[in-house]
Structures are given as C-alpha cells and as structure tokens.
Length: 68
Image (cartoon, rainbow, N blue to C red):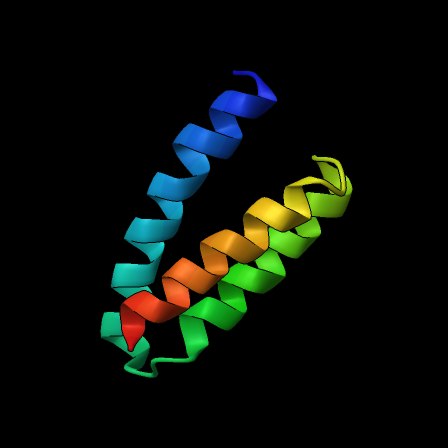
C-alpha cells in the first residue's frame, strides 16, 4: 500500500468509522475532532510531508462542521 492509498483510502474510512463509534461512546461533540487532529498531526510529521497539514486542516474543518 502506497502513501497515497493510505492517505486517501484507508485513513478517511477509518476516521469516519472511529468517529462514529467514539462519538456514540463518549457523547461529546468536540472530543473526536480533537483526537483526529492529534492523530493526523502525528502522521503529518512522521509519515507524510508538511503539505499534508493543509489537507488535514481541510478534513478537520469538514469533520467539525459535520458535528454542528
């Protein structure tokens, strides 16, 4: 699996599934966007380049607006 397949395939699907499950368990709207930000920030500096940070912020903005 390449980095692009991971970034645009497995990562979004796993974030959606994890978001649904964790939101049902914790029932705090702000919790999962914060956890997603931390996970994606770690992946930005360990696995991807800094340009992934822009995609990460766009994804988190969409993710946060979904919970409003």
